[in-house]
Image (tube, rainbow, N blue to C red; front, side, top):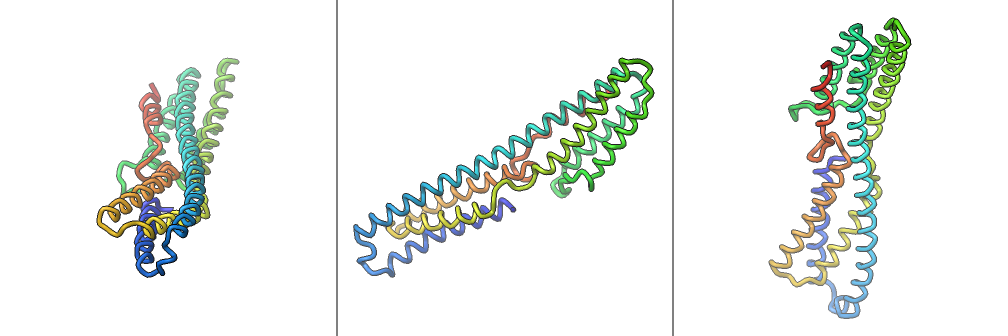
Amino acid sequence: MNPTIVGIIVFTCTFGGALLGMWLSTTLPEHHLDAESRDTVKVGIGLIATMTALVLGLVTASAKNSFDAMDSAVKKTAIDVLTLDRVLARYGPDTGEIRKGLQRGVGARIDMIWPQTSSKPTNLDPVRSGAVMETEGLADVIRALKPRDDSQRALQSRALDLTETLLQARWLILAGTESSVPVPFLVILLFWLTITFASFGLFAPRNATVLAVLFVCALSVASAVFLVLEMDTPFDGLLKVSADPVRYAYAHLNQ
């Protein structure tokens, strides 16, 4: 789902609902807009507004949890990369080329996931990006090392465990990029918001001040939905998972 398009749709429906309510207030018979009708509508809209708040809260919590999980996964990956580099460094000079290859691979992954130019698409697929073959190749090279003592054997085993962890992390990050906001939730939320704004317009005075307030309210609701969906796409858009932990790890590799 494109957050910008969804945000525009939400704004159009909510503000359009308010305008529809204002139009209905001029066409409905007078007894449909009397005090008793107004009180009944207010009770019903209060119920809808409560359910809307609950659904919006659930959607926001789901998107925030997904964003935080991706942020934690990126930080964990950066730590594992640094740890792998230090384990290889402790192994000895035999791992010099392996460490250089690790550094090149991390740099390539940074450029794919966090491209410098907006025209370059983000590539998170470990298969299409070559990350799987690269990590498996790294594991093969480490496995081919000939340890000379128990200390090197322990370091080799630790390095192999870390490469497996890195491969799992890449698949985990890919799985986490799937939308955590169910489309039916959004559809129901949009319907309820439209009904709520239509009720606002139905009983509101028809003047520029009221129209401006309803415009701002619709814009605010659309902005909230936009931000929630931005959090649901942690590697694209305005709200992105920071690349700083991985860039920090990259800067300290092979030292």
